[in-house]
Length: 248
Image (tube, rainbow, N blue to C red; front, top):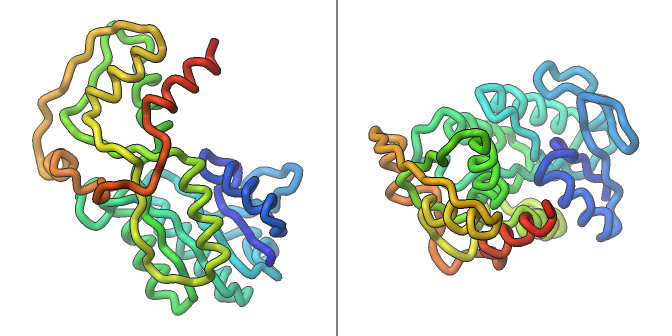
């Protein structure tokens, strides 16, 4: 099986590519920049996609612009897949994209809809946010005297476990919209920040912003989380301790 991975050099792409290769699959990585094992193509303009998709059986569409370009990029993936005779398009999305009026989530939902309406055989998997997303949220504030948080819960999952599930779905073949996956625990963002600070040995004050509106209300209601028990096994505390040890 020849597999093309968009976003293959990203946070989720790297462990997914490694697992696919370990399973014996021939994996190609689509990238805007040349490099070993990469095919050059631009998802935004469509340039180079015909050559990159030629002979491919399965496409894992993991790339994201984290913004409004996602539907356009997905449309280019659909068109190139159709022209190349791709037999399976697997798309990673986010839990809650159909319930939370956040612009990025709306873009992911439109991307889902374009794949579903494409006539291609597909699989769509929604996952909760990765552990690394919470870590990034905290790290971006490292120069501030306090950590600013939000009054919302979360259900973070290890990116490696999402990669494992993607490999399972590649091997299962087109499955449509499959059950959402989330981490093994639901915790408040404040709790996650406290866990991170204990692991890192820091003691900065935490300010919780009293935001309001439809989007923040949907997050407070947990519309971005799955039912428990979650799919994942690694807790955020285990992740935080591992990251702290690696930083020493």
